[in-house]
Length: 86
Image (cartoon, rainbow, N blue to C red; front, side, top):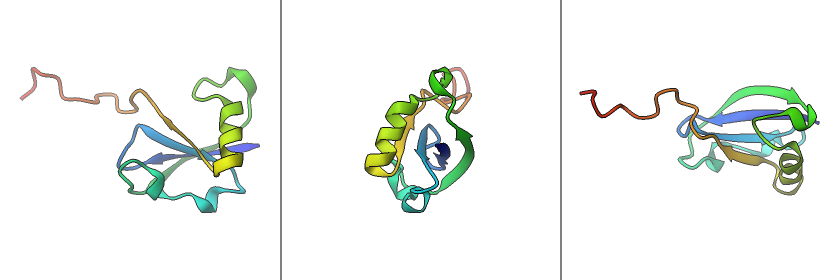
């Protein structure tokens, strides 16, 4: 399987993962704040060494729902303005 990974433009910590068969079925409406989807890339299975997500869970979700949604801890290197900044 090849995983197709999208990021939600209005919610940059949310990612949707799908496959070629289901990619036409997903849209930004699945994101928490809707918006658009930005293609991050297409990746082959690499087994248990994948750090970003569990491939087995992702494949089950894609088979059942057409996509797998994950939230990263933060994709933004400076998620919040520090308290000492104006």
